[in-house]
Image (cartoon, rainbow, N blue to C red; front, side):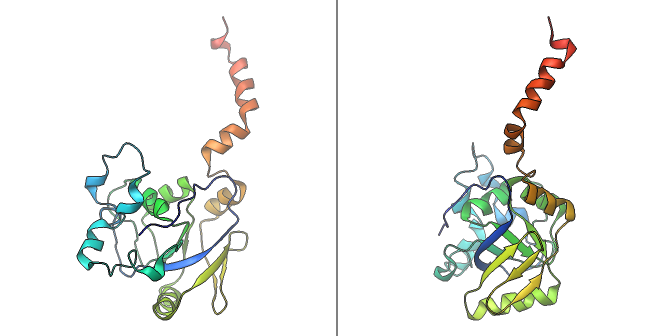
Length: 202
């Protein structure tokens, strides 16, 4: 099962989507995308292989295989999500499956940074709040609207004040997380700098 992949770009101020819950602490990057898939030339095909081994073990009962989670885009996790090796393939695989934001108890630092670099905000909530969300998802679908400006997540029944590093929040709101777009936006500054470098003048 694979949700529609949309490459994020520029300013990210709001994320609206259906939630998918993945219960368990210390879910590492090798579980998110097994090492044998790292030899790919690009990331485009990784979405279909996310949690490949876990999904095989659960024989269709893994959250990423359940029909009710089709087109989900906000992932709810527990503590130390994304630990293990520093492979950037893990957030790339999640994004290509359709994940646009992650809410959890805590994240491995390098995984968090890799997510920011490709436009996936990672928010934290206390364990109690995460359990409330996961229990809610067990019984019905949950659609959340996340606003980066005030870090608020709300639905018809639930409201949460999310936490995110202030530096990350500012990067998403300004679009500075997107290095390519930032470079293109400042093309004239780059050209002027290039023309003024003395060692490039002949």
